[in-house]
Image 1: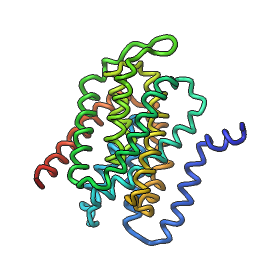
Image 2 (image 1 turned 60 degrees about the horizontal axis):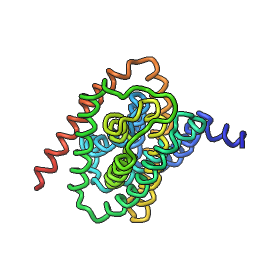
Image 3 (image 1 turned 120 degrees about the horizontal axis):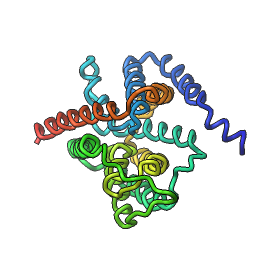
Image 4 (image 1 turned 45 degrees about the vertical axis):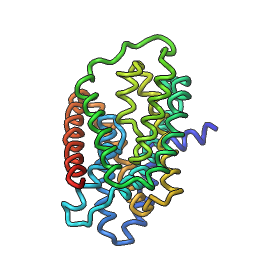
Length: 288
């Protein structure tokens, strides 16, 4: 088991996989693939820099950047389908890199992780028949809530405790089910809203929240990916282009984040997310 563990946690593995994907994508000669590689790199780099899930950055980039550069717009169903692949790949990569992380609380993972994974799968299935503007509205609402929590409550984390934290299990179960269902609809792992809710609503200490939410997102994003895949919502070549850019970028972002002040980055990110969410709501309301 030890050689296998060293292999899957080797930081060079994402770079190697990215290189293999790049060879195939470059040989196709599709300009859009090149743009998606760049978008995947930028989103994953920012995710590694500030420690949030990639979807909250990736979805707005995919919706707004291609038309600005002369490419045909990507519809929201395509965007959410390919986003879940990148999010699941990034979450699994991060999870494997923290196989021995002792900050994971098993009780919290069982209560939140299982409910979130099941409901993420259901949300992904339901998203196949939901109108695109509703999917955009769901994401914009989640982004506004996440931005508000990040900006207003970022200095109000609960105190650390010795041993396993106590928490309201029915509340945690409801949080997992609700966040999971919405994350499945929009093709996200849900970390960008799950982490602040666990911190400020369920009142889980920061150390346990960070360690446990990583594996919760692994379970939820993989379940959401399966739901999107079985309903035919994933454009796999586009998804692989995102992965090719994203796999090595998260490592670089994490390296740089150790030399910066996360609180300032979180404030900037919160403002950016709020502005994007407002822009998306303007687009949604304009089509009603």
